[in-house]
Length: 287
Image 1 (spheres, rainbow, N blue to C red):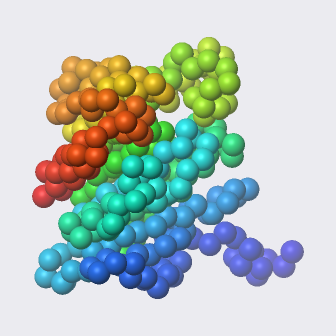
Image 2: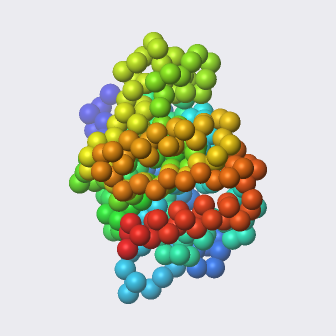
Image 3: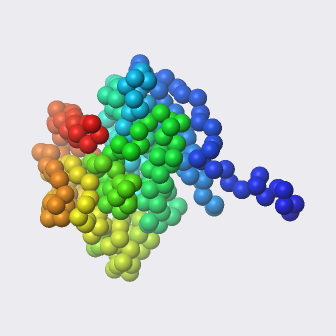
């Protein structure tokens, strides 16, 4: 190969790629869809959507919500907050943008593509990319909160607990996320994430368990969990809250009555209240 070709054959650098033109899916909202944030050798490019408020320059760059989708670590859509929100008009990300927040919704590698810690590495890179491109995007990535549901809640908690303090998000919202993978049996989504049952990879299972990664200095958490969750018992959310409080971290925890996983069975007002409580937490951490 001619040496002059080498630079052209190297993967593009997402830190310098041009941004796509913005769409306007709703009044007061701009949307950059499918922005590459990581290009890995042997893997698909990883992209994110960025929902932005239309606001005057005098308002300053908006803080960032990094939203992590669910789907048992093996499926899911990056812009899906769950089935209880798909009929909302305006949708949840439009509401967040109109409230003055930029919302970044990244892809991450699923368990059929790579095992842990691949998805955590991806989200760490997404947060770093937002910081590098903050001026281009017109956002304040220094004021970031991570928010995830189900598998995304698990990954959001890990991201908040493992990012170096200088670059850590200012807070974390966890909806019905797994917090302890150390007993994951064969054939489960947790085992697929780990690449083996937890008993066969105990160190990896512990590294993938938010309860085991709690240490002093973690950012504040808000943990919401269905009282009747049959997929990830509410005791997992309570265990993480207890560990965080023991480490001196400001932590809110509450269960939602009659709610199974994904807020199935919860009253519509309770679902609204979960969203409002989470938005209020984001405001409190980024104001």
